Length: 173
Image 1 (cartoon, rainbow, N blue to C red):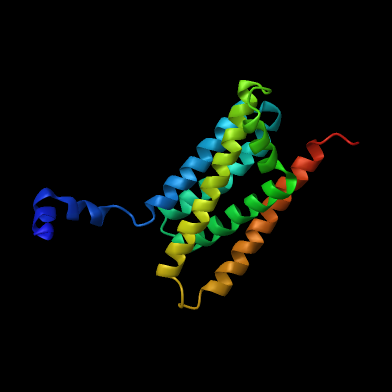
Image 2 (cartoon, one colour; image 1 turned 30 degrees about the vertical axis):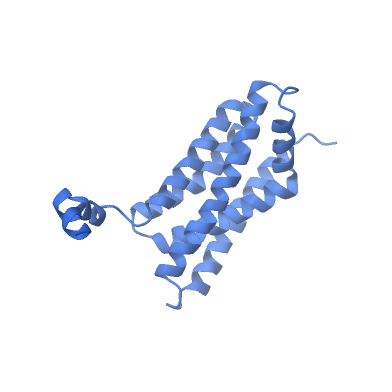
C-alpha cells in the first residue's frame, strides 16, 4: 500500500533524482558558512578562516563531480584533524568557558564561541556520515589504503600551511 501511495504522490521519483550524499554536502556547506561568518566576526583572522573554508568547498566540488570516494575520506580526515587541533589549542575549552560565563564577554565573542562549538559538532557529524557512506560504498573494494594515504598527505600539507600561517601571525613572545 505504501509503495503504491509513494508512486502516486511522486515521492519515489524524487528519491531517484536526489544524490545519496546530500547530507555530507549539507554539512560541508554549513561548515563553509560558519567559517565565512567567522571571517566577518574576526577580521584579524580573515585569511585563516577563509583558508579553512576552502577545504570544505573542495569537498562540495568533489561531490558535484562524483568524486565521492575522495570527498568521504578527506571529509573524515579533515574533520578529525580540525577537532584534534581545536582541542589541543584550547579553542573548544575556551569556547565552552566563554559561553558558560557569557555575561563577561561581548556579544561578538559569544557568537564566535558558539560558532566554534557548532563547527565542532558539524565536524563530528561529518566524520560519522562520511564513515557511514565510505563503509556502505567503498569498504572491501581495495581502495581504502591508497585513498587514505593520498588524502592523509593532502590533509597534512593543508593543515601544515594553516599552522604555519597561524604561527606567523602570532607576535613573538
